[in-house]
Amino acid sequence: MDRPSFAIYDASAGSGKTYALVKEYLKIILTSKKDDAYRNILAITFTNKAVHEMKSRIVGSLSEFVKEEPSSKAEVLIMDLVSETKLPREKIKTKSKQIIKHIIHNYAAFDISTIDKFTQGYKSFCS
Image (cartoon, rainbow, N blue to C red):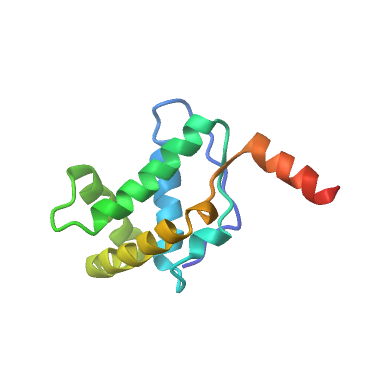
C-alpha cells in the first residue's frame, strides 16, 4: 500500500481529525509485516489531552477488534479498514491480537508525542 511519507490534518473541532489519524495509524500497524511497527511511527499532536485520546482510541480499537462482537463504532472502523487496506476481517482480528501483546510488553515504545515534547527531545539530541 503506497502512502505519503507524512500527512498533515488541519480541520475544525469535531470534524473527525482524531478518527482519521487513528484510522491511518491502524492502517500502518495492521498492514506492516512486523507486530511492533508502532515503534517506527512518528505521531505528533498539540496537547497532552490529544495524545491521551489518540493512544486510548488506538488501544481501544485494537481491543474491540479481537472481540467476538465488537462495538458498533469498532464495526464502522473495521469496515473502513477492510475497504481501505483490503485486509480480510479475520486478519485484522489476528493481527490486532498480536499488536496488543507487543504494546502491553513495550508500552514505553508506543509513543505519540506533543510538538513541545518532540522538539525538546530533538534539541537534547542535537546538543
